[in-house]
Image (cartoon, rainbow, N blue to C red):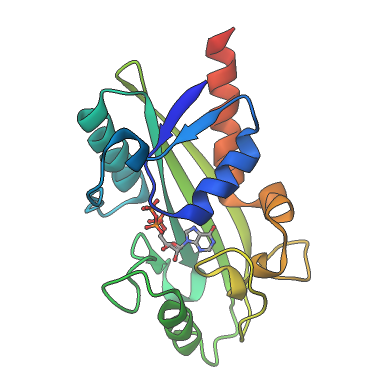
Length: 193
Ligand code: ITT
């Protein structure tokens, strides 16, 4: 089955393709002639995922899905949350975001955090939402070079290493995005039958 994934993030694309396996071929917005940035201007993960998938569906008329992810840190009242991409600057500056997160958590005893992903799927013109969460903690210096974003600072519960110290398969065993994508895949398989 071919389906369009509304992302410009190559790391996300390879994580999601690894979870979905060969039965699904992911197309990117660019593959469908959509070159411009897809807007995400809402104040919730659900709102942004939905805005991205509706935008791409409107531009292409194809079945598609989008994800929006946030890192929710307990001691920061759930920040950066929906503002995770632009926490420190206006761009996607992962290093600056990580520096700011460490600064804002300096001296904090409570390091609890969770990643939350919301996927919006538009299939036959109807929207379906799927959520995935992973609980963990933020360490006090970056470790590892795999993955992207806040991965070097996040250790999922039950592990002794960060997402950035894991292979894609190890991250996908527990990650927020993989959990949401497995729900999406289950749904797609169930309606194919
Ligand atoms: P698209 O909107 O093009 O899909 P994006 O990078 O903007 O890509 P999101 O809005 O979903 O993706 O994610 C917001 C930010 O959250 C992202 O820029 C990263 O800093 C962080 N993030 C998302 N998923 C992550 C993950 O699996 N590991 C670490 N950080 C992640």
